[in-house]
Amino acid sequence: MKIDPKSSADLSAQIAKAIRDAIVSGDMIVDERLPSETELCDQFDVSRSTVREALKRLAAQNLIRTQRGATGGAFVRRLSYDEAQAQHVTTSTLLLSMNAVDFETACEARFALERACAPLCAERRTPDNLATMRAEIHRQGQPGLSDERFCDSDVAFHRALVDGAGNPVLSYQLAGAVEAMQPLMNMITFTQRDRDQIIALHTQIADALEGQDGAKADTTLAELSHYTLTLGRQAMEARAKRSNNAD
Amino acid sequence: MKIDPKSSADLSAQIAKAIRDAIVSGDMIVDERLPSETELCDQFDVSRSTVREALKRLAAQNLIRTQRGATGGAFVRRLSYDEAQAQHVTTSTLLLSMNAVDFETACEARFALERACAPLCAERRTPDNLATMRAEIHRQGQPGLSDERFCDSDVAFHRALVDGAGNPVLSYQLAGAVEAMQPLMNMITFTQRDRDQIIALHTQIADALEGQDGAKADTTLAELSHYTLTLGRQAMEARAKRSNNAD
DNA sequence: TGCCTTTAATTGTCTGACATTTTAAATCGC
DNA sequence: GCGATTTAAAATGTCAGACAATTAAAGGCA
Image (cartoon, rainbow over all chains, first blue to last red; front, top):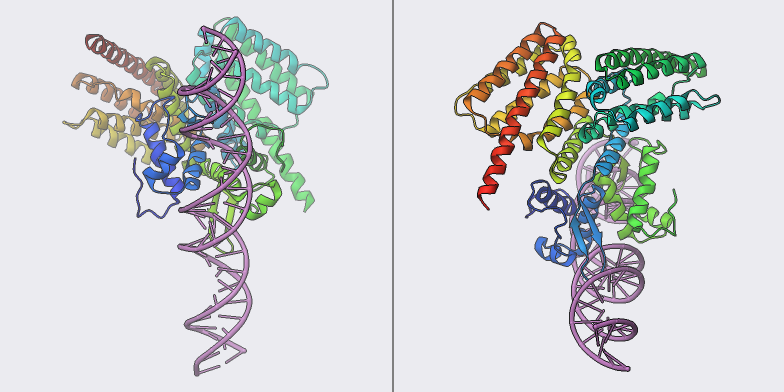
Protein backbone atom coordinates (compact mmCIF):
# COMPACT_ATOMS: atom_id res chain seq x y z
CA MET A 1 0.00 0.00 0.00
CA LYS A 2 1.86 3.05 -1.29
CA ILE A 3 1.05 6.57 -2.40
CA ASP A 4 2.50 8.51 -5.29
CA PRO A 5 4.75 11.32 -4.00
CA LYS A 6 4.41 13.15 -7.32
CA SER A 7 0.63 13.36 -7.21
CA SER A 8 -0.85 16.77 -6.61
CA ALA A 9 -3.98 15.45 -4.93
CA ASP A 10 -4.59 15.75 -1.23
CA LEU A 11 -2.57 13.32 0.81
CA SER A 12 -5.67 12.20 2.66
CA ALA A 13 -7.38 11.41 -0.64
CA GLN A 14 -4.40 9.42 -1.85
CA ILE A 15 -4.19 7.45 1.35
CA ALA A 16 -7.92 6.79 1.31
CA LYS A 17 -7.62 5.53 -2.26
CA ALA A 18 -4.74 3.22 -1.37
CA ILE A 19 -6.72 1.65 1.45
CA ARG A 20 -9.93 1.56 -0.57
CA ASP A 21 -8.16 -0.27 -3.37
CA ALA A 22 -6.89 -2.80 -0.87
CA ILE A 23 -10.43 -3.42 0.34
CA VAL A 24 -12.12 -3.51 -3.05
CA SER A 25 -9.48 -5.80 -4.49
CA GLY A 26 -9.94 -8.21 -1.63
CA ASP A 27 -6.47 -7.70 -0.17
CA MET A 28 -8.20 -6.77 3.05
CA ILE A 29 -11.15 -8.85 4.10
CA VAL A 30 -14.24 -8.13 6.14
CA ASP A 31 -13.57 -7.48 9.83
CA GLU A 32 -9.85 -7.28 9.27
CA ARG A 33 -8.24 -4.62 11.38
CA LEU A 34 -6.40 -1.77 9.72
CA PRO A 35 -3.13 -0.57 11.23
CA SER A 36 -3.69 1.94 14.02
CA GLU A 37 -3.61 5.62 13.18
CA THR A 38 -0.09 5.92 14.56
CA GLU A 39 1.09 2.99 12.48
CA LEU A 40 -0.49 4.48 9.37
CA CYS A 41 1.33 7.75 10.11
CA ASP A 42 4.61 5.84 9.97
CA GLN A 43 3.65 3.80 6.92
CA PHE A 44 2.68 6.79 4.81
CA ASP A 45 4.96 9.24 6.53
CA VAL A 46 2.27 11.81 7.24
CA SER A 47 0.75 13.37 10.32
CA ARG A 48 -2.07 11.89 12.29
CA SER A 49 -4.57 14.52 11.10
CA THR A 50 -3.96 13.49 7.52
CA VAL A 51 -4.42 9.83 8.34
CA ARG A 52 -7.59 10.62 10.21
CA GLU A 53 -9.01 12.59 7.30
CA ALA A 54 -8.32 9.61 5.08
CA LEU A 55 -10.08 7.26 7.50
CA LYS A 56 -13.10 9.56 7.69
CA ARG A 57 -13.37 9.43 3.94
CA LEU A 58 -13.51 5.65 4.09
CA ALA A 59 -15.99 5.75 6.94
CA ALA A 60 -18.24 8.02 4.89
CA GLN A 61 -18.33 5.33 2.22
CA ASN A 62 -19.23 2.67 4.76
CA LEU A 63 -15.99 0.86 4.02
CA ILE A 64 -14.69 0.87 7.58
CA ARG A 65 -16.00 1.16 11.10
CA THR A 66 -13.96 2.38 14.04
CA GLN A 67 -13.93 1.32 17.64
CA ARG A 68 -12.29 3.03 20.53
CA GLY A 69 -10.38 1.40 23.33
CA ALA A 70 -7.51 -0.97 23.82
CA THR A 71 -8.46 -3.54 21.18
CA GLY A 72 -10.12 -0.91 19.04
CA GLY A 73 -9.10 0.50 15.72
CA ALA A 74 -10.52 0.67 12.22
CA PHE A 75 -12.00 -2.48 10.74
CA VAL A 76 -13.11 -3.35 7.25
CA ARG A 77 -16.84 -3.25 7.36
CA ARG A 78 -19.27 -5.64 5.74
CA LEU A 79 -21.45 -3.58 3.44
CA SER A 80 -25.04 -4.58 4.13
CA TYR A 81 -27.87 -4.49 1.62
CA ASP A 82 -29.65 -1.86 3.68
CA GLU A 83 -26.69 0.47 3.76
CA ALA A 84 -25.89 -0.03 0.11
CA GLN A 85 -29.52 0.62 -0.71
CA ALA A 86 -29.69 3.78 1.40
CA GLN A 87 -26.54 5.03 -0.27
CA HIS A 88 -27.89 4.18 -3.69
CA VAL A 89 -31.16 5.97 -3.03
CA THR A 90 -29.38 9.12 -1.86
CA THR A 91 -27.09 9.14 -4.87
CA SER A 92 -29.91 8.50 -7.32
CA THR A 93 -32.09 11.20 -5.80
CA LEU A 94 -29.29 13.74 -5.94
CA LEU A 95 -28.39 12.76 -9.48
CA LEU A 96 -31.95 13.36 -10.63
CA SER A 97 -32.41 16.65 -8.81
CA MET A 98 -29.01 18.13 -9.61
CA ASN A 99 -29.12 17.27 -13.28
CA ALA A 100 -32.71 18.35 -13.79
CA VAL A 101 -33.68 14.97 -15.16
CA ASP A 102 -37.09 15.30 -16.73
CA PHE A 103 -40.05 13.37 -15.50
CA GLU A 104 -40.38 11.28 -18.63
CA THR A 105 -36.83 9.97 -18.56
CA ALA A 106 -37.00 9.01 -14.90
CA CYS A 107 -40.44 7.52 -15.27
CA GLU A 108 -39.45 5.47 -18.28
CA ALA A 109 -36.40 4.11 -16.48
CA ARG A 110 -38.37 3.27 -13.39
CA PHE A 111 -41.14 1.35 -15.11
CA ALA A 112 -38.82 -0.39 -17.52
CA LEU A 113 -36.88 -1.78 -14.58
CA GLU A 114 -39.96 -2.55 -12.58
CA ARG A 115 -41.50 -4.51 -15.42
CA ALA A 116 -38.39 -6.65 -15.37
CA CYS A 117 -39.46 -7.84 -11.93
CA ALA A 118 -43.01 -8.69 -12.87
CA PRO A 119 -42.46 -12.25 -14.15
CA LEU A 120 -40.21 -13.17 -11.24
CA CYS A 121 -42.60 -11.65 -8.76
CA ALA A 122 -45.55 -13.53 -10.27
CA GLU A 123 -43.62 -16.73 -9.79
CA ARG A 124 -42.35 -16.20 -6.28
CA ARG A 125 -44.44 -13.60 -4.45
CA THR A 126 -45.16 -14.62 -0.87
CA PRO A 127 -48.46 -14.12 0.95
CA ASP A 128 -46.61 -11.42 2.83
CA ASN A 129 -45.81 -9.51 -0.35
CA LEU A 130 -49.43 -9.73 -1.48
CA ALA A 131 -50.67 -8.59 1.93
CA THR A 132 -48.42 -5.55 1.80
CA MET A 133 -49.71 -4.65 -1.64
CA ARG A 134 -53.34 -5.03 -0.60
CA ALA A 135 -52.73 -2.97 2.51
CA GLU A 136 -51.15 -0.17 0.51
CA ILE A 137 -53.96 -0.24 -2.03
CA HIS A 138 -56.41 0.13 0.85
CA ARG A 139 -54.42 3.01 2.24
CA GLN A 140 -54.41 4.72 -1.13
CA GLY A 141 -58.20 4.70 -1.13
CA GLN A 142 -58.63 6.39 2.19
CA PRO A 143 -60.29 9.80 2.04
CA GLY A 144 -58.31 12.84 3.09
CA LEU A 145 -54.98 11.27 2.25
CA SER A 146 -52.46 13.95 1.27
CA ASP A 147 -50.73 13.77 -2.08
CA GLU A 148 -47.45 13.16 -0.33
CA ARG A 149 -48.80 10.23 1.66
CA PHE A 150 -50.40 8.85 -1.46
CA CYS A 151 -46.97 8.89 -3.08
CA ASP A 152 -45.42 7.22 -0.03
CA SER A 153 -47.95 4.46 -0.31
CA ASP A 154 -47.35 4.19 -4.02
CA VAL A 155 -43.65 3.69 -3.41
CA ALA A 156 -44.39 1.10 -0.72
CA PHE A 157 -46.66 -0.79 -3.12
CA HIS A 158 -44.05 -0.88 -5.81
CA ARG A 159 -41.33 -1.89 -3.39
CA ALA A 160 -43.43 -4.82 -2.32
CA LEU A 161 -43.72 -5.76 -5.98
CA VAL A 162 -39.96 -5.56 -6.43
CA ASP A 163 -39.24 -7.44 -3.23
CA GLY A 164 -41.68 -10.08 -4.40
CA ALA A 165 -39.16 -11.11 -7.01
CA GLY A 166 -37.20 -12.59 -4.12
CA ASN A 167 -33.89 -11.39 -5.43
CA PRO A 168 -32.08 -9.07 -3.02
CA VAL A 169 -29.72 -7.80 -5.70
CA LEU A 170 -32.69 -6.81 -7.82
CA SER A 171 -34.34 -5.13 -4.83
CA TYR A 172 -31.20 -3.18 -4.13
CA GLN A 173 -30.78 -2.02 -7.70
CA LEU A 174 -34.41 -1.02 -8.08
CA ALA A 175 -34.67 0.85 -4.83
CA GLY A 176 -32.63 3.58 -6.45
CA ALA A 177 -34.96 3.90 -9.39
CA VAL A 178 -38.20 3.68 -7.46
CA GLU A 179 -37.36 5.92 -4.53
CA ALA A 180 -35.47 8.51 -6.51
CA MET A 181 -38.66 9.11 -8.48
CA GLN A 182 -40.53 10.20 -5.39
CA PRO A 183 -39.52 13.89 -5.40
CA LEU A 184 -40.70 14.10 -9.00
CA MET A 185 -43.94 12.28 -8.22
CA ASN A 186 -44.52 14.68 -5.37
CA MET A 187 -44.91 17.49 -7.87
CA ILE A 188 -48.10 15.89 -9.13
CA THR A 189 -51.51 16.76 -7.76
CA PHE A 190 -53.60 13.61 -7.76
CA THR A 191 -57.28 14.24 -8.29
CA GLN A 192 -59.80 11.74 -6.98
CA ARG A 193 -60.23 10.45 -10.51
CA ASP A 194 -56.46 9.98 -10.86
CA ARG A 195 -56.33 8.07 -7.63
CA ASP A 196 -59.24 5.83 -8.55
CA GLN A 197 -57.55 5.02 -11.81
CA ILE A 198 -54.23 4.22 -10.16
CA ILE A 199 -55.88 2.12 -7.46
CA ALA A 200 -57.73 0.16 -10.12
CA LEU A 201 -54.46 -0.57 -11.90
CA HIS A 202 -52.74 -1.48 -8.64
CA THR A 203 -55.56 -3.89 -7.89
CA GLN A 204 -55.23 -5.47 -11.32
CA ILE A 205 -51.52 -5.88 -10.76
CA ALA A 206 -51.98 -7.44 -7.34
CA ASP A 207 -54.62 -9.77 -8.78
CA ALA A 208 -52.34 -10.79 -11.61
CA LEU A 209 -49.46 -11.47 -9.24
CA GLU A 210 -51.70 -13.44 -6.92
CA GLY A 211 -52.83 -15.49 -9.91
CA GLN A 212 -49.17 -15.84 -10.93
CA ASP A 213 -49.94 -14.26 -14.27
CA GLY A 214 -46.69 -12.48 -15.05
CA ALA A 215 -47.74 -11.38 -18.52
CA LYS A 216 -50.88 -9.72 -17.19
CA ALA A 217 -48.89 -7.96 -14.48
CA ASP A 218 -46.49 -6.75 -17.12
CA THR A 219 -49.11 -5.30 -19.44
CA THR A 220 -50.89 -3.62 -16.55
CA LEU A 221 -47.61 -2.12 -15.41
CA ALA A 222 -47.17 -0.80 -18.93
CA GLU A 223 -50.59 0.81 -18.67
CA LEU A 224 -49.73 2.30 -15.31
CA SER A 225 -46.48 3.59 -16.76
CA HIS A 226 -48.33 5.27 -19.57
CA TYR A 227 -50.89 6.78 -17.22
CA THR A 228 -48.24 8.07 -14.83
CA LEU A 229 -46.42 9.63 -17.74
CA THR A 230 -49.60 11.47 -18.75
CA LEU A 231 -50.11 12.77 -15.23
CA GLY A 232 -46.49 13.87 -15.08
CA ARG A 233 -46.76 15.74 -18.35
CA GLN A 234 -49.86 17.56 -17.15
CA ALA A 235 -48.16 18.49 -13.89
CA MET A 236 -45.09 19.81 -15.71
CA GLU A 237 -47.27 21.86 -18.07
CA ALA A 238 -49.23 23.33 -15.18
CA ARG A 239 -45.98 24.12 -13.43
CA ALA A 240 -44.58 25.83 -16.52
CA LYS A 241 -47.76 27.87 -16.88
CA ARG A 242 -47.62 29.01 -13.26
CA SER A 243 -44.02 30.12 -13.57
CA ASN A 244 -44.86 32.02 -16.78
CA ASN A 245 -47.67 33.84 -15.05
CA ALA A 246 -45.35 34.67 -12.20
CA ASP A 247 -43.03 36.60 -14.51
CA MET B 1 -28.04 23.69 10.46
CA LYS B 2 -27.62 22.32 13.97
CA ILE B 3 -26.25 19.25 15.66
CA ASP B 4 -27.64 17.33 18.59
CA PRO B 5 -25.44 17.85 21.68
CA LYS B 6 -26.88 14.69 23.25
CA SER B 7 -25.88 12.41 20.40
CA SER B 8 -23.08 9.99 21.11
CA ALA B 9 -21.89 9.86 17.53
CA ASP B 10 -18.70 11.49 16.35
CA LEU B 11 -18.99 15.22 16.03
CA SER B 12 -17.56 15.10 12.54
CA ALA B 13 -20.23 12.61 11.52
CA GLN B 14 -22.99 14.77 12.96
CA ILE B 15 -21.69 17.87 11.22
CA ALA B 16 -21.34 16.01 7.96
CA LYS B 17 -24.92 14.80 8.29
CA ALA B 18 -26.21 18.31 8.98
CA ILE B 19 -24.53 19.66 5.87
CA ARG B 20 -25.48 16.64 3.79
CA ASP B 21 -29.11 17.08 4.75
CA ALA B 22 -28.94 20.70 3.68
CA ILE B 23 -27.62 19.65 0.29
CA VAL B 24 -29.96 16.73 -0.28
CA SER B 25 -33.01 18.74 0.76
CA GLY B 26 -32.09 21.48 -1.66
CA ASP B 27 -31.37 24.09 1.01
CA MET B 28 -27.96 24.43 -0.55
CA ILE B 29 -27.77 24.46 -4.32
CA VAL B 30 -25.10 23.42 -6.77
CA ASP B 31 -21.98 25.59 -6.73
CA GLU B 32 -23.08 27.35 -3.57
CA ARG B 33 -20.18 28.05 -1.27
CA LEU B 34 -20.18 26.59 2.22
CA PRO B 35 -18.96 28.74 5.11
CA SER B 36 -15.19 28.61 5.50
CA GLU B 37 -13.69 26.11 7.88
CA THR B 38 -13.17 28.82 10.49
CA GLU B 39 -16.78 29.95 10.18
CA LEU B 40 -18.00 26.37 10.54
CA CYS B 41 -15.87 26.05 13.69
CA ASP B 42 -17.79 28.96 15.17
CA GLN B 43 -21.18 27.76 13.94
CA PHE B 44 -20.85 24.27 15.39
CA ASP B 45 -18.52 25.26 18.21
CA VAL B 46 -15.89 22.66 17.43
CA SER B 47 -12.24 22.70 16.44
CA ARG B 48 -10.99 23.00 12.92
CA SER B 49 -9.83 19.36 12.81
CA THR B 50 -13.36 18.22 13.49
CA VAL B 51 -14.80 20.47 10.81
CA ARG B 52 -12.20 19.25 8.37
CA GLU B 53 -13.02 15.61 9.08
CA ALA B 54 -16.66 16.40 8.40
CA LEU B 55 -15.79 18.07 5.11
CA LYS B 56 -13.64 15.13 4.04
CA ARG B 57 -16.59 12.85 4.64
CA LEU B 58 -18.69 14.96 2.29
CA ALA B 59 -15.89 15.10 -0.26
CA ALA B 60 -15.69 11.30 -0.20
CA GLN B 61 -19.34 11.21 -1.22
CA ASN B 62 -18.74 13.64 -4.06
CA LEU B 63 -21.07 16.13 -2.41
CA ILE B 64 -18.56 18.97 -2.22
CA ARG B 65 -15.38 20.08 -3.90
CA THR B 66 -12.79 22.32 -2.29
CA GLN B 67 -10.62 25.02 -3.74
CA ARG B 68 -7.67 26.71 -2.17
CA GLY B 69 -6.85 30.37 -2.23
CA ALA B 70 -8.46 33.67 -1.37
CA THR B 71 -11.84 33.05 -3.00
CA GLY B 72 -11.62 29.34 -2.35
CA GLY B 73 -13.58 27.19 0.04
CA ALA B 74 -15.93 24.25 -0.16
CA PHE B 75 -18.65 24.26 -2.80
CA VAL B 76 -21.65 22.06 -3.38
CA ARG B 77 -20.73 19.85 -6.24
CA ARG B 78 -22.92 18.80 -9.14
CA LEU B 79 -23.05 15.03 -9.13
CA SER B 80 -22.36 13.86 -12.66
CA TYR B 81 -23.66 10.68 -14.23
CA ASP B 82 -20.14 9.35 -14.57
CA GLU B 83 -19.32 9.86 -10.92
CA ALA B 84 -22.61 8.48 -9.73
CA GLN B 85 -22.10 5.48 -11.97
CA ALA B 86 -18.56 4.85 -10.76
CA GLN B 87 -19.78 5.07 -7.19
CA HIS B 88 -22.66 2.74 -7.94
CA VAL B 89 -20.41 0.18 -9.59
CA THR B 90 -18.00 0.18 -6.65
CA THR B 91 -20.79 -0.23 -4.14
CA SER B 92 -22.49 -2.98 -6.12
CA THR B 93 -19.26 -4.87 -6.60
CA LEU B 94 -18.44 -4.70 -2.92
CA LEU B 95 -21.96 -5.69 -1.97
CA LEU B 96 -21.75 -8.79 -4.10
CA SER B 97 -18.30 -9.84 -2.97
CA MET B 98 -18.75 -9.11 0.71
CA ASN B 99 -22.08 -10.84 0.99
CA ALA B 100 -21.08 -13.85 -1.03
CA VAL B 101 -23.96 -13.36 -3.43
CA ASP B 102 -24.25 -16.48 -5.51
CA PHE B 103 -23.83 -16.45 -9.21
CA GLU B 104 -27.44 -17.31 -9.95
CA THR B 105 -28.89 -14.43 -7.97
CA ALA B 106 -26.58 -11.87 -9.52
CA CYS B 107 -27.05 -13.31 -12.98
CA GLU B 108 -30.81 -13.33 -12.69
CA ALA B 109 -30.86 -9.72 -11.55
CA ARG B 110 -28.56 -8.62 -14.29
CA PHE B 111 -30.44 -10.22 -17.14
CA ALA B 112 -33.84 -9.28 -15.81
CA LEU B 113 -32.77 -5.64 -15.81
CA GLU B 114 -31.05 -5.89 -19.11
CA ARG B 115 -34.07 -7.38 -20.79
CA ALA B 116 -35.97 -4.33 -19.63
CA CYS B 117 -33.78 -2.29 -21.97
CA ALA B 118 -34.28 -4.48 -25.00
CA PRO B 119 -37.51 -2.93 -26.34
CA LEU B 120 -36.27 0.61 -25.82
CA CYS B 121 -32.95 -0.21 -27.41
CA ALA B 122 -34.63 -1.79 -30.40
CA GLU B 123 -36.56 1.40 -30.89
CA ARG B 124 -33.77 3.91 -30.44
CA ARG B 125 -30.38 2.30 -30.96
CA THR B 126 -28.06 4.51 -33.01
CA PRO B 127 -25.66 3.34 -35.72
CA ASP B 128 -22.99 4.06 -33.16
CA ASN B 129 -24.47 1.61 -30.68
CA LEU B 130 -24.74 -1.07 -33.32
CA ALA B 131 -21.17 -0.45 -34.46
CA THR B 132 -19.91 -0.88 -30.90
CA MET B 133 -21.78 -4.15 -30.55
CA ARG B 134 -20.44 -5.50 -33.83
CA ALA B 135 -16.93 -4.45 -32.90
CA GLU B 136 -17.14 -6.23 -29.57
CA ILE B 137 -18.56 -9.34 -31.19
CA HIS B 138 -15.62 -9.32 -33.56
CA ARG B 139 -13.21 -8.91 -30.65
CA GLN B 140 -14.82 -11.83 -28.86
CA GLY B 141 -14.06 -14.08 -31.80
CA GLN B 142 -10.37 -13.32 -31.97
CA PRO B 143 -8.10 -16.26 -31.24
CA GLY B 144 -5.92 -16.17 -28.17
CA LEU B 145 -8.19 -13.80 -26.28
CA SER B 146 -7.88 -14.35 -22.54
CA ASP B 147 -10.94 -15.16 -20.47
CA GLU B 148 -10.61 -11.85 -18.72
CA ARG B 149 -10.51 -9.89 -21.97
CA PHE B 150 -13.44 -11.90 -23.24
CA CYS B 151 -15.39 -10.80 -20.16
CA ASP B 152 -14.35 -7.19 -20.66
CA SER B 153 -15.68 -7.34 -24.16
CA ASP B 154 -18.86 -9.00 -22.96
CA VAL B 155 -19.45 -6.15 -20.54
CA ALA B 156 -18.74 -3.60 -23.27
CA PHE B 157 -21.26 -5.31 -25.55
CA HIS B 158 -23.95 -5.27 -22.92
CA ARG B 159 -23.23 -1.69 -22.00
CA ALA B 160 -23.72 -0.71 -25.61
CA LEU B 161 -27.05 -2.49 -25.48
CA VAL B 162 -28.06 -0.61 -22.34
CA ASP B 163 -26.84 2.71 -23.66
CA GLY B 164 -28.81 2.05 -26.81
CA ALA B 165 -31.99 2.59 -24.82
CA GLY B 166 -31.03 6.26 -24.86
CA ASN B 167 -32.01 6.79 -21.26
CA PRO B 168 -29.13 8.00 -19.07
CA VAL B 169 -30.95 7.12 -15.87
CA LEU B 170 -31.39 3.58 -17.10
CA SER B 171 -27.73 3.41 -18.12
CA TYR B 172 -26.67 4.60 -14.70
CA GLN B 173 -28.84 2.12 -12.85
CA LEU B 174 -27.79 -0.79 -15.00
CA ALA B 175 -24.09 -0.09 -14.90
CA GLY B 176 -24.15 -1.34 -11.32
CA ALA B 177 -25.77 -4.62 -12.24
CA VAL B 178 -23.73 -5.30 -15.35
CA GLU B 179 -20.30 -4.32 -14.10
CA ALA B 180 -20.68 -5.80 -10.65
CA MET B 181 -21.19 -9.18 -12.28
CA GLN B 182 -17.77 -9.09 -13.85
CA PRO B 183 -15.78 -10.54 -10.92
CA LEU B 184 -18.21 -13.45 -10.85
CA MET B 185 -18.01 -13.90 -14.60
CA ASN B 186 -14.23 -13.91 -14.33
CA MET B 187 -14.41 -17.16 -12.40
CA ILE B 188 -15.67 -18.89 -15.51
CA THR B 189 -13.39 -20.59 -17.97
CA PHE B 190 -14.83 -20.11 -21.45
CA THR B 191 -14.10 -22.95 -23.81
CA GLN B 192 -14.06 -22.30 -27.53
CA ARG B 193 -17.49 -23.89 -27.76
CA ASP B 194 -18.82 -21.59 -25.02
CA ARG B 195 -17.47 -18.58 -26.83
CA ASP B 196 -18.91 -19.61 -30.14
CA GLN B 197 -22.29 -20.06 -28.53
CA ILE B 198 -22.17 -16.67 -26.83
CA ILE B 199 -20.96 -14.94 -29.96
CA ALA B 200 -23.82 -16.49 -31.90
CA LEU B 201 -26.33 -15.19 -29.39
CA HIS B 202 -24.70 -11.76 -29.35
CA THR B 203 -24.95 -11.67 -33.12
CA GLN B 204 -28.62 -12.60 -32.97
CA ILE B 205 -29.21 -9.84 -30.47
CA ALA B 206 -27.40 -7.27 -32.56
CA ASP B 207 -29.35 -8.39 -35.62
CA ALA B 208 -32.64 -8.12 -33.77
CA LEU B 209 -31.80 -4.66 -32.51
CA GLU B 210 -30.69 -3.54 -35.94
CA GLY B 211 -34.00 -4.82 -37.31
CA GLN B 212 -35.76 -3.05 -34.43
CA ASP B 213 -37.26 -6.33 -33.30
CA GLY B 214 -37.48 -5.85 -29.55
CA ALA B 215 -39.30 -9.11 -28.91
CA LYS B 216 -36.63 -11.11 -30.69
CA ALA B 217 -33.90 -9.32 -28.77
CA ASP B 218 -35.70 -10.10 -25.56
CA THR B 219 -36.11 -13.81 -26.18
CA THR B 220 -32.49 -14.10 -27.30
CA LEU B 221 -31.39 -12.31 -24.14
CA ALA B 222 -33.44 -14.83 -22.20
CA GLU B 223 -31.56 -17.61 -23.98
CA LEU B 224 -28.25 -15.96 -23.23
CA SER B 225 -29.28 -15.58 -19.62
CA HIS B 226 -30.07 -19.27 -19.41
CA TYR B 227 -26.83 -20.24 -21.06
CA THR B 228 -24.75 -17.99 -18.83
CA LEU B 229 -26.45 -19.47 -15.80
CA THR B 230 -25.49 -22.96 -16.96
CA LEU B 231 -21.88 -21.93 -17.45
CA GLY B 232 -21.87 -20.30 -14.04
CA ARG B 233 -23.23 -23.41 -12.37
CA GLN B 234 -20.56 -25.54 -13.99
CA ALA B 235 -17.83 -23.15 -12.91
CA MET B 236 -19.10 -23.12 -9.32
CA GLU B 237 -19.25 -26.91 -9.24
CA ALA B 238 -15.72 -27.20 -10.59
CA ARG B 239 -14.56 -24.70 -8.02
CA ALA B 240 -16.26 -26.60 -5.18
CA LYS B 241 -14.64 -29.83 -6.37
CA ARG B 242 -11.20 -28.26 -6.45
CA SER B 243 -11.53 -26.91 -2.93
CA ASN B 244 -12.72 -30.32 -1.71
CA ASN B 245 -9.70 -31.98 -3.24
CA ALA B 246 -7.48 -29.41 -1.60
CA ASP B 247 -8.64 -30.47 1.85
C1' DT C 1 -11.55 -18.09 42.32
C1' DG C 2 -13.86 -13.78 41.79
C1' DC C 3 -13.98 -8.93 42.14
C1' DC C 4 -11.61 -4.56 41.87
C1' DT C 5 -7.98 -1.46 40.36
C1' DT C 6 -4.64 -0.15 37.41
C1' DT C 7 -2.60 0.30 33.11
C1' DA C 8 -1.93 0.53 28.35
C1' DA C 9 -3.69 1.07 23.74
C1' DT C 10 -6.60 3.37 20.72
C1' DT C 11 -9.68 6.71 18.80
C1' DG C 12 -11.87 11.53 19.52
C1' DT C 13 -11.07 16.40 20.12
C1' DC C 14 -8.59 20.70 20.76
C1' DT C 15 -4.92 24.22 20.04
C1' DG C 16 -1.56 26.48 17.58
C1' DA C 17 1.60 26.77 14.05
C1' DC C 18 3.37 26.89 9.34
C1' DA C 19 3.04 25.82 4.18
C1' DT C 20 0.72 26.46 -0.10
C1' DT C 21 -2.35 28.42 -3.26
C1' DT C 22 -5.07 31.91 -5.17
C1' DT C 23 -7.16 36.34 -5.63
C1' DA C 24 -7.36 41.13 -4.93
C1' DA C 25 -5.34 45.25 -3.60
C1' DA C 26 -1.46 48.23 -3.42
C1' DT C 27 2.58 49.95 -5.27
C1' DC C 28 5.81 51.32 -8.65
C1' DG C 29 7.54 52.81 -13.09
C1' DC C 30 6.46 55.17 -17.12
C1' DG D 1 -3.58 57.38 -15.99
C1' DC D 2 -2.19 52.70 -17.04
C1' DG D 3 0.19 48.41 -17.09
C1' DA D 4 3.28 45.40 -14.66
C1' DT D 5 4.96 43.96 -10.45
C1' DT D 6 4.80 43.33 -5.66
C1' DT D 7 2.46 42.65 -1.52
C1' DA D 8 -1.13 41.31 1.48
C1' DA D 9 -4.94 38.64 2.81
C1' DA D 10 -7.88 34.62 2.85
C1' DA D 11 -8.51 30.12 2.40
C1' DT D 12 -7.30 25.17 2.47
C1' DG D 13 -3.46 21.58 3.37
C1' DT D 14 -0.24 19.68 6.66
C1' DC D 15 2.19 19.05 10.89
C1' DA D 16 3.15 18.56 15.99
C1' DG D 17 1.76 17.88 20.49
C1' DA D 18 -1.47 17.60 24.05
C1' DC D 19 -5.40 15.83 26.63
C1' DA D 20 -10.01 13.36 26.98
C1' DA D 21 -12.75 9.21 26.58
C1' DT D 22 -13.22 4.49 25.99
C1' DT D 23 -12.17 -0.22 26.27
C1' DA D 24 -9.96 -4.55 27.27
C1' DA D 25 -6.44 -6.87 29.49
C1' DA D 26 -3.24 -7.42 33.26
C1' DG D 27 -2.39 -7.37 37.99
C1' DG D 28 -3.60 -7.32 42.87
C1' DC D 29 -6.28 -8.56 46.79
C1' DA D 30 -9.55 -10.90 49.66
